Length: 379
Image (cartoon, rainbow, N blue to C red; front, top):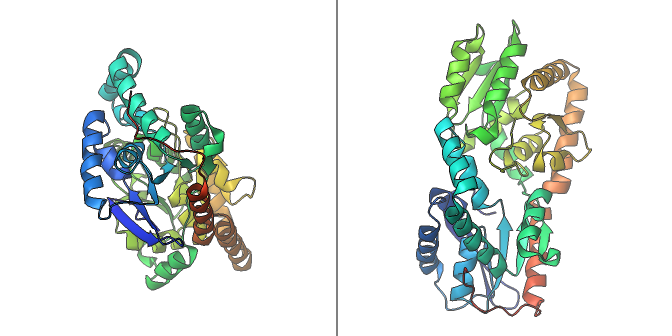
C-alpha cells in the first residue's frame, strides 16, 4: 500500500522485467496549492530525486503536475494517475475556511481569470499526459471525463483498507475503558469534514446519557467547536483529543459505539471513499456519515452506514440515538452485525481486491499501443 502522507516512492518489478514507480504527491501538492508555477518546479525537483534509473515502463502518480513532469522527462513511459480531486477545487476549499477567506475565494474564483486559467491549464496538461486515470469514486470519474473527454481512459477504483492488518493493530491495543461509552470522530477539523455539525447534533441529543463524543484531530475549526462547547451545559461530554498517533486509531474505532463522518461539500470538494469510514467498518464498528459522494457509494444499498443529509445537525442527533439504542441490544445480534460490516468491506474494499484491480489496469495500460504521446506542454 502507498503511505497516506508525505512523499514516498515504491518501486516494484514488472513481469516483463521493466520497472514501475508509484509516487504519493498529495500532501506536497496541497502545501503549494495556491502557487501553480511553483508547484511544477517543486514537482520537478522531486522527479529528479526519484529518477534513479534512466527509463520507466510505467509511472503511477497521484497528482496531475507529477504526470506532466514525468511525461516530459520520460516520454515513452506509460502513466497512470489517481484522481483524488482537482487542485482548483482544493484552492476554493482552503480559501473558504474563514469569512475573509470566503471573500478572497469569491474574488479569485469569480473575478480573477488569471488564477483560474493557470490552475486549469496545468491540471488539464497533467491529466492529458496520463494514459489512464483512476478515480476514487464516481464523482471523481465524472470530473476526470469532463477534463479529458475520453471515458475509455477513466476507471473507478475505490480506496481500500487492509482489513487483517487493522484487526491485528486493534488487538494489540488494550480496551479504552477509561473513556467509558463513546462515539468517535477521527477527522481533520477542516470545514469540509463537518465536525461542527456532529458536535451540535451530539449536544442536542446527549442530555443526561452517560456517553461521550471523542474527537481525534486538529484543524482550523477547533476554535469554533470550543466556542460551541463553552455555550452548552453538556459541553464537558465532548473531549478534544487533539492529534492522535495513527497506531491508536484502530483501537479507538473498535471500542466506539459508532464512528462519525459528517462531511459537507465546501468549495466544490466532496468527500470521496473516506478511509475513516472504511477503517471503522473494517473493524466492525457502525458508521454515521453524510449521504454524499463516496460515502454514499460505500453503503450503496448495503445498509452498513447510517446515512444522513449533510450539514443537518438534527438528523445527526437522531442517528446518535439510533446507534446508542442498537448498542444496548443483545450481544449476539451486535456480533452478527459487526461481522457483516467486516465481510462487506473485505469483499468490496479489501486490499486484495484493490491490488488485483490496479494490476489489471497496469497490464492493460502497458500493453495498449494506441496512445503514443509526446512530452506535454501546458498551454
